[in-house]
Image 1 (cartoon, protein in one colour):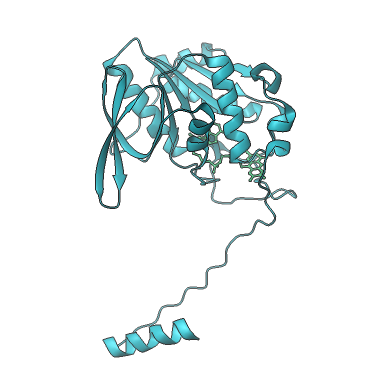
Image 2 (cartoon, rainbow, N blue to C red):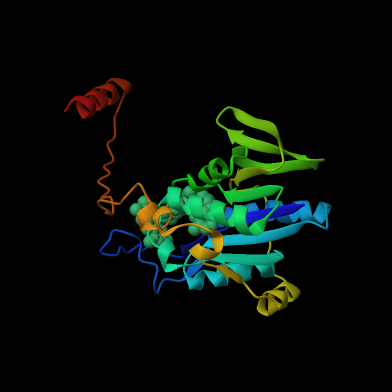
Length: 257
Ligand code: FAD
């Protein structure tokens, strides 16, 4: 099987700073693999354990420094890393990000069975990128998947976590699946993995390489823009009610005032 895992490099901080263009400042901030993507990698490793000839490609779009998260993914067990990096990709919203990733997959990665994404990225947190990649590639998608149950021929059973309980979906390949935080701990890199990562060469593709025009990617290809970015102020208060009637009147006061 051929599996592509989309991983995003996110800042390892709660102290988010903004640039003058209202985008997140990433320079000079320690970066990590988006935690949800570690669970997506884990599901890929589970399949590989069962089917050892499986090839796992980690793919990210980001600045040159994002090479480090691809090396980390290789140290954890991926076979190779692909970095989409070009000044023309800068300022991409989720639509342009998905379009860029989909172009790379279509034009450079060839046949695949499964694309795994995290459900959310902890910085942008829109949960749009995975479904938008599937839409661009015109393949089925399954979201909010807690774990992949089993691969059966040319399909996989995925357990979705819903408010009402767990729903199991069988989806045929090729498909895209968005993974939630799983039940188990994620893998740690082994000494051999780290050695393999150090020896590996990350393939870097530009906009020209993947056949996407500057008008379709980056800020030019982004229909959304950030008009304002701010840190919300919390103004929480704690009120005690002695009995139900007082509670009801306090709620009424709160709603109608
Ligand atoms: P989600 O949709 O929540 O992520 C879900 C999953 O999608 C992830 O778990 C991962 O599997 C996959 N995924 C998401 N992003 C990537 C990626 N880059 N590579 C591989 N897989 C991925 N961000 C910048 O870094 N630099 C900018 O200059 C910038 N400019 C922006 C300008 C605008 C107008 C807007 C609206 C956003 C901008 N962003 C920028 C944010 C950027 O669009 C999002 O971070 C990105 O599109 C992913 O969205 P998300 O963070 O909500 O991820």
